[in-house]
View 1 (cartoon, rainbow, N blue to C red):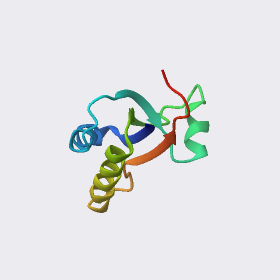
View 2: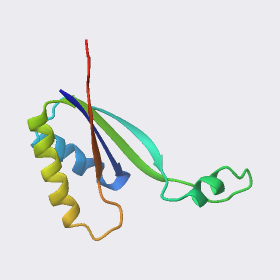
View 3: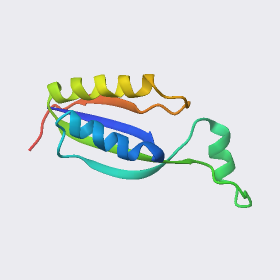
Length: 101
């Protein structure tokens, strides 16, 4: 069992849900997050008088799942990202789990 973490801009939330379903990842959690691409956005967001929003509305998904499901998910994400015309690909990482209850 491993932990897979996926981030995507808000516009791709439904796409990520489909990718999880197609990879047989049925149990997962999600959270709304703000995504940043560089340090200047973070500095701008910390300015009390800034009229602009600092981050991009994004989503974070995570699931404890089997290697075989993760392999399928990564393949599907690579295929999805290959067809994008934006500079906001879906990102994913895998973290090994040493112990769990």
